[in-house]
Each structure stands twice: as C-alpha cells, then as structure tokens.
Length: 201
Image (cartoon, rainbow, N blue to C red; front, top):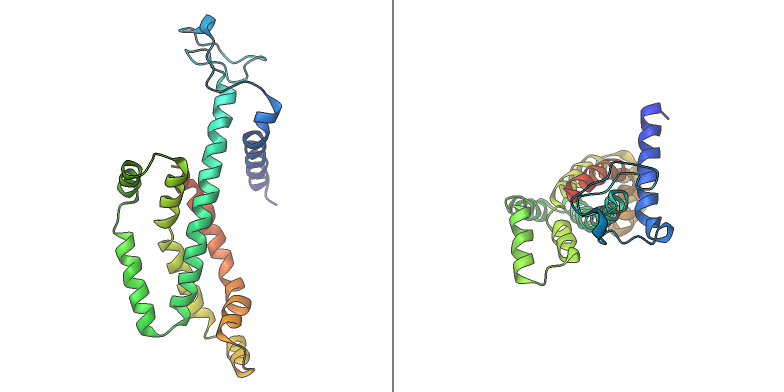
C-alpha cells in the first residue's frame, strides 16, 4: 500500500473510531455549556484537545459528535442509492432496448430534479428528521450508479464467458447476480466512496 493511502486509511479509521466510541469514552454532553466560560473561548489544551467555543462547549466532543451524524448520513443514504442503482443498472443493461430506453429516460428525468430543493420540500411537508434527509438523498442520488452499472453490463454481456453460461442454460437471474454483478462492483465501489462525500455535504 502506498504511504499516502496508508495515511488516509489511518486517518479515516481514527475518525470513525472516535465518532462511534466517543460516547462510551466520555460522559461530556456536546451541547452542555459552561457558564464560567461563556464569552471566553479556550485554546487547545490537554483538558480540551480542540479548545472550547464561546459558550464553553468542548470542541473535540462536538466535532466527533457531528462526525457520527455525518458518517451515519453517508452510509445510510449511499446504501440506498447503491442498492437502487445496482438493480436498475442490471435490468437496464441486460433487458431489451425498449426497457433500457424507458429506464434511461426515467434516469434523465430524475437527474433534472435539484436534490437540495427536494430535501427542503420534504422537510417542510414531513416532520424534520435526519432520517428523512438520508432517505431523500438516497432516493435522489442513484442515477449515476445506474448509468455506471448499465455501461458495465452492456460491455460484460458480450463477452465469451456470458455466451458460454447462456449455452449451459443458466437462468437470467442467476446470470445477472452470479456472473455479471461481481464484475460491476469495482466502479460501483469508487462511486460509493465519492457519493459518501457528496451525501455529507
């Protein structure tokens, strides 16, 4: 592994560790302010690693409490979008031209809808909730994955091992999920990684 990749992995692992286990390591409430420190933010120290804000709240605790929410949003929303994108991409790439065309036009339609405005609209209609945000992000960010998977399927289905599998009488469902799906995963993993950053933003 390259040194920069290893450094990135260590950093992300540390971030996830603190985000998940900090509530068990510290009893400090991230929203509890210190009346003695109001208006006087402290610099970083051994007691407060990131210092405090002008309300006396520990910034280290608040940072990783926020990170926990960000990671949750990223994982849940990307899981939804990847699941939808994989299924529709497989169907679109392997089905007839008519079904492929209908699904691609639907993808184009969904890509024309601004995600942020849809999120705000849902939040106004429904009770404001982080779960509503995650679901909306997931339901409005699968289009890119669908296109990636479709392109991979269109390429893979013409290869000789797929022709041989068809000749053996393997069902389309087994062909899709056992022989084609594994070959589509590398670009999907890359898309999921980039999607997590977008979901957090």
